[in-house]
Image (cartoon, rainbow, N blue to C red; front, side):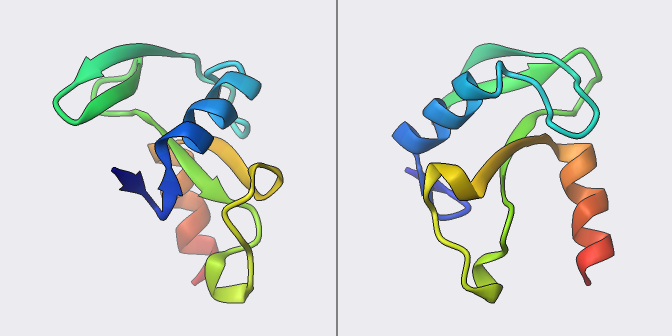
Length: 84
């Protein structure tokens, strides 16, 4: 299964590299067993870790580890609004 076009192995590597923390706000997450694979829940209800392309795919960014960062869903949503 893929999230944002990023395969599970790369996603796990990036989360581990970033210490299960959002690179913008620093919130820590815990790995939980989800229905379709692991999920990373934070202490804030409904906020999870997600992968984010530093250089967007629409601007030519790829799925390599050096172009992906860990963001929580809150920071990722705010970043998306600024990019629009």
